[in-house]
Amino acid sequence: MSEVLRAFRRNAVHVRQALGSLTPESGQVKVEGGYLGDAGQIERYKLLSIPVRRALKDSDRASFGAALAELQAWASPNGAGHHDDSACRRAADAWQRLQQELDSTVVLGGAKVRRRDILAGWLDAAAFYDKLDRDRAYDQLMDRVGKAAEGIGAQLMEDAARVVVLLDEAAAAALGEPVILPPPARTPPPPPDPKEPWWRRLI
Image (cartoon, rainbow, N blue to C red; front, side, top):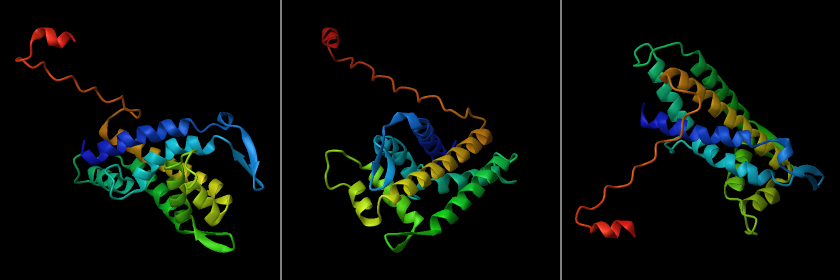
């Protein structure tokens, strides 16, 4: 497996785990500024935002775009892993629909805002959220576009995460690997220094 697909699949493990933590029962619902909010929502979305940010960043080793291109080449008639690429095509179609949605706009605060910008702001707000930091990206995002950005950004993040999972499933099928990757093997400790006295190793 290439380093690109390896990094993407390892990152997708964290996406799956974080998606599984987003349950309605995991936080206390409260009202802020006329919107229903979850008291623990931002903390839980922090777990999801970090791997999703990596997948959406073209320069990252775990980039969705790079993994998709490599998987499409792998599954092509001249590729090393030529096979039924229907799962890959479904992921590519879902990715295209997501890009179209991100390029659309919504009116917030009396101005049109691209959903892509809302998602980028929400990803930063969640990834760098710190309850003790009063000048945080979360507050800046809420001040800039309003509380509605929280719900829009959270939904777009979940949509992006599910597209990542779709491509991960396609990669697993193409490579003949389990959908849920096992944890990586632990690096064994270095061998003892033959010049070191035996009694020092016991300390």
